[in-house]
Length: 145
Image (cartoon, rainbow, N blue to C red; front, top):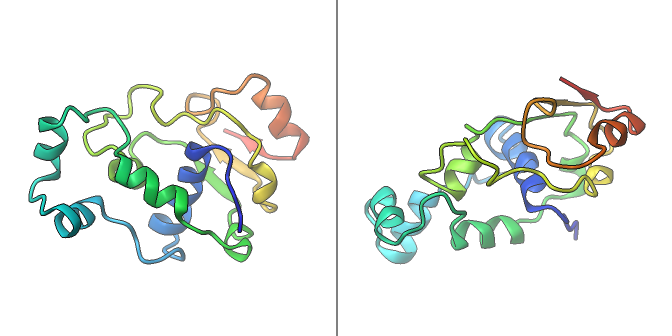
């Protein structure tokens, strides 16, 4: 089984495959999950009432950490986009505003899992907090915008 080292890097891959390409199915919905498992009718109220704003919910972390992504799907990823408004982030941290480093990638050790990755959009402005990121990406012929 493919194991990611950086949870937030995996979330970028999940965003691409699950919410953009719709090839990793079914799409995960935190609202539906919490309604079914815990009877939560308002995810926003649940998060606020339990002091969970601006954090990744344990249930989402568990789901996405356990989520298997096969090599054949990983090979289809040619572009990743860094954007604080991704659907996967709303599923993980429903009231997060994308304005801090909650979902920053802190390691590029997972790059070999994406053999056809050729471009990362947004890496210049935000989202990857890795010293030497430009050199690492350039060494793999990954364009950065």
